[in-house]
Image 1 (tube, rainbow, N blue to C red):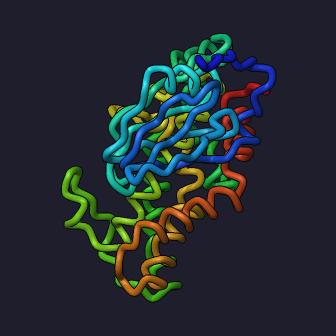
Image 2 (image 1 turned 180 degrees about the horizontal axis):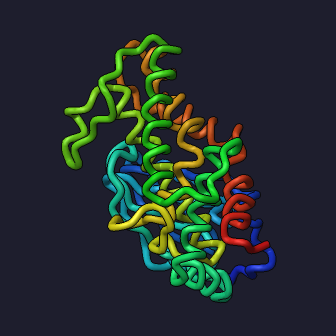
Length: 281
């Protein structure tokens, strides 16, 4: 009997802050089974994917997806990202259409006005420096302050977990040349970008209009991601390096990262933070 496809009503879909953050899949196929999305592993095992309650699906190596599955996930406001092995590389994203362009117009209005653009950047930096007065600071001064803060943070966390640290080291396409801590940092950061990218799209903003970062694929996503990296990427990378004895075990990293995302309520916080930064409810 032919399956019946039911169009999902946007009003019935959980809000982005209430969804499960992400599901990582590799070596298999996403298809439609009646009105639901199913994942068929290379071994033949079939798993139903409740895409209406998932924020982001990360597709790793050896995956394929049907047109019907992409349509169903789009209707459920579930973002799809194509990434490399263990989330170490980010390739592309299937954008999810939003209901209106109000937030996008707001973002453009802030970006196109030099004074408002700088004020928005100051709001972003105020999350990192809540006790400092940034009103008279230029963008370059605040970026310098942030660079020093992050450098000291790496040093402090490395000392906390007693891990040798020679600085951030990542060469695109040559991840195996990185040490374990840098591998974990790259993996967690890329996964974090995918999750926040889905949040930005779901809220109707553009990931390409940033206020601090520029000249990169997803500047606004990077602006937001820097707010959460200390707790979900940096601290976790050094902690896992110690716990795994210097080895890189992808399943351990994926489980620990997912736990950090959930325990720190990143989806709910990011929705609220983006609203505050952009001046929208």
